[in-house]
Length: 419
Length: 144
Image (cartoon, rainbow over all chains, first blue to last red):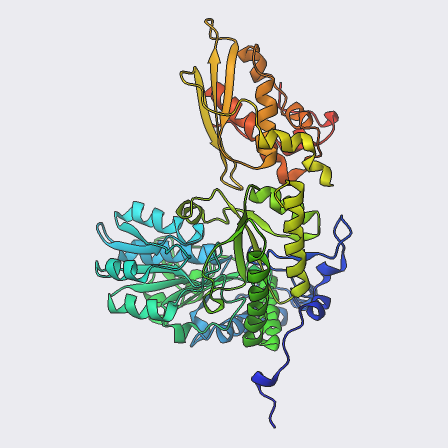
């Protein structure tokens, strides 16, 4: 019988930790680190760290410029990284991948370049109440600069986008719809394909913040039917300082540059300049060369694991954590309770204990979680919470991490006398 | 490490001193901790000379550290002059908590100090430099 993807074994988080040097160190409290903050930033496998060192040690020169052998080598590797990212997210062409610093920069690029060219006073921009500040503040700034109106799709009590509310707002003819694939604050997986079709029928382009989905599940931007998508390298086992914007070629071709300067031009006189082709039109100045090598290695690592298996692994962890945390008296879980609609990100509050105090006490047990508003203050307002504690999973987590989190929450309740 | 949550801190958290809003008041200010979004306000009543604190209260929800810090700090303020308030060393505010405060929780410990300083100048005060508050006196400091 042929061994297909379906027959491959489940991922073993504990075994995969051997690939990540950070787990070799114990915490100050003497525990093995249970790292549950991958939604903020992921840890790096040795392959990524070595690819960065190798790029500097053996393949380093500036890209797009040199005639000499070393520069041609560096250039080939940089463009190879672009092809790897394109393949990974199902982009029809690597020419549609623009390297940027992170998803935040990608979204700002769209807001400045597409937004300030295409929007006028009175036009409607549609975002959602669920967004990370990175997919919210650029649209606020765009609305302020152009006189466009900005509306937000409401959330249901269980952390889903309210699709009836979306329909009503789409009927008002927005020019652009900006939404996240997975909410970093709630873990909700949005039905992007369906929303994209509805938005296109209404005449809008769709901008997807894919920073929280690309590292954790198969994502194919062409099949999703969106127009532009943003991702960050550092959340997908890659280095910080590099991310990508994907956009449909005709959209990118029609957009003016965002940052200007070297290498994004074909010809410059004292009177003016002509822009390079996409994607280089959007890559002014020397880019993150070694980081591109690291990102390429991260893509290779994730592809070798298989994104279907990554998703299945994190789904198992979610299901166990959802029930283990839900069993603790005084713990309130946020977001959809269906594992089909909830990624490996669990936001919760513990009655009578502030999220900061929860995070400090679980840290004393070697469990790293996030506490705060997760750069999504409107989400906190929506649910009348000052902040939440958030646990998020990646490939190197296992069920033991989940048990330790649950135990540490009970320990916090004992400290505060609320157990 | 668990001694961050000594009974002393938890007692202030559960039953904070000087919690609420004074109305009327002479000074009022609200500020927030950017990492968690917690907001804290402070109201002060001054004597007839408008130079000395007669009463003080703080309000807002927050973590055990920020609530205990505000509870302990406000206990110290009655009878002090505005100049005394300006001269409070943020390092003392942290030390008065009597528990080990690290960089991760420093803003929690100093939010009450920041709100108080804001009340004196009418705009948001800047956060004290971490190095001035957490290291030895030899580092020097910006506090008077």
